[in-house]
Image (cartoon, rainbow, N blue to C red; front, side, top):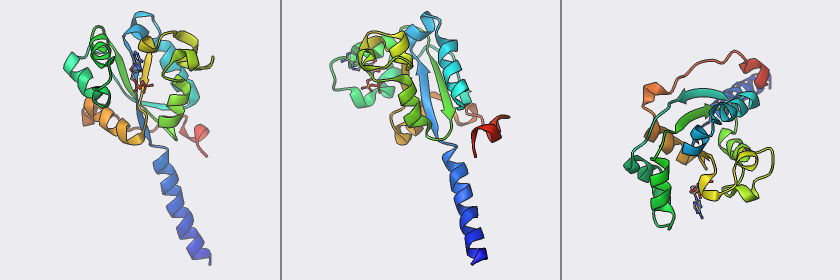
Length: 169
Ligand code: ADP
């Protein structure tokens, strides 16, 4: 009856609100910083409607990058990748929103810029797989790990964005 339906819609409303709070670690790599593309990357995530909840400008240690890319430690490019990623400043950020992990990866493009379509960040601004400008978490689970690696709990800010009602139903 009416009561049951009311209860169900209340439950689904809170589940929907929860889904809007998915988070992804998006990081501008050293060449993105050096090439002056920090604003461009931020602009795309802002204009899409995702919400910035954490950001820093930092030069990571090689050890930190080895932890970040631990899953790739058996691959031949791993040492060079970690060395490169720690050679200059990076801009790690946490972006929040519905499907941000998957959609963020779509916005980035493929790992190999040659396979990335125009309109994607890697497709528009990069050529070489080892210099593909941006990192993005590949699952909600790895996003959680990466966010904890780069940010303390109190560096990730919970707030209501003024445009929220214009982005979500
Ligand atoms: P993604 O960053 O798209 O999640 P991976 O996790 O597979 O991709 O790889 C991490 C990073 O390692 C890539 O973004 C890329 O910069 C680098 N990389 C991947 N494959 C190669 C390769 N064959 N040669 C050099 N660098 C690579």
